[in-house]
Image (cartoon, rainbow, N blue to C red; front, side):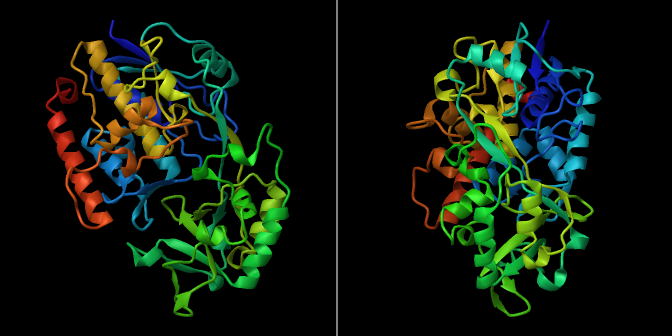
Length: 437
């Protein structure tokens, strides 16, 4: 019987299950929510976004924009939902979290090839298996994974940004704009002068953190660095990071401010906004006290405070091949952030590749072997051996995609040319039998 078990219905597991099911393969999709929730999840829906509602740039001069374009071309469920539930965010693709996750859940629930099992997986099932339980895997399944993968004890921690209501933001102290006037004016910008900024950084550095077992600053992946950890690195670190004022002209003065905190829409109605780049593990009381020092947020209503949670990933170059299969037991594949791909889009893309290549194997068809010229292929090749030195999680970037064999003047032009080549290759690969299904 052509059947595959998928553990976990996050972005990677949902995309993987979809790719298998659309090719006529029966899928048993396990998801422990809502019977059991991780520390960072609150919704019963599949594909829940935790850290941010942004899927980042949608432009082909950006590597993640290319990856999304490849996924759209290959029939991604995650991208279909993202496009249907887009909210305004300048040149980025941001979504209404609840609508996005609900649609993914409904599509899988309605698919006749998908059997959904709503309980925690306590063991490693027999047969063809994809493990996509994520960096917040329950202790029970994490122990089983550790037994399969003796090098899986690497870990770091992720931080989640707070969300405030728009009506509680003091718009007399803020303004709508997108950086460099790119796209529409979708961000609420909360400026600070030098005195306000220095006072804010001083309190942020001294603020009390919530206890997180085993946490140390060196174990945090740079892409989700808590704002208080950044502040400890130097008084101006935030002004070159999430509080950079560059490209944001204050309409009240006609010039850039000393520092700017940005808020990004978090739902389709535009009633709640997340504080961009302000992942944190301060205590909730300290978040309220310190973040309220931002003039525009002096009376802010926090509908969600930031939280800190564990993230675990595999030493994938030793353990996995380019198809994300366990070298020691190829019936088992992994997908998602636990493989070392970092980011929502990258996690979904890994699930897509695993779904397509697992379907090819189960159906006895030729593998696609996505090449390094494509973003989806470059990720698989990076995690399976393309890294140098100690393996670290990686966002998609043009540095891991095979370079052009000719010179193109200008970085944006070069990146656009790489994207054009990649999408042309994807179109040619669609002649493969498994991609016709």
